[in-house]
Image (cartoon, rainbow, N blue to C red):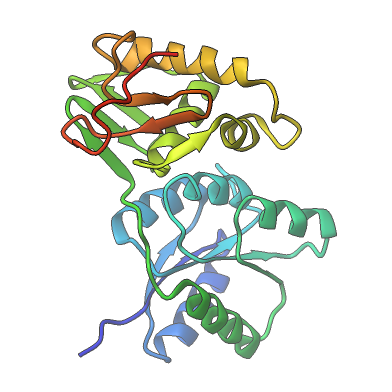
Length: 241
């Protein structure tokens, strides 16, 4: 028997949550609920849903910020809900990684159609685990928590964003430009010295020997690659810089 499609519904209005749940469960979806952004991030890491329906305007943490954080570790389809029909909101949500956008009030058939499209495009796969663990280093992307030898590693916002992007692309070579655009913003792209400085700062905090790194390896003149120390895939690329 095929497993049910899991949908996480996040909205601070109880009537909306229950309305969506009733209609989805009637169509054989497995539904989980959250009432704010903080609960949403916790539920997403625990449940590993196939799709998330996410309200934009919520207490504690707005839906766009939740979307941005989810995109640090998962490609799960996200459909945003809002009472606002503002083009800037739509653009911002899509820029942060949302797959679709529905304005309240909405019809059930419209929402169901958008769910089917999002799932079809995604192939119902979630490729990344929210927790990266290698040697004595642990990065929990759902909690934005970094630990080394069991202790919490204090990182600045930029240091964390840089590490999270490398973790999300573990094993892949990431160019200086790609890091600049995705961590610092689209207006950056040529300031490679920013990347070198912050990589050095990261190595000082997570490596035993920053000049001979185990985790963040240098691809000369190109960028960096984050690897697990036990891997033998890139044994000759541990140059500093």
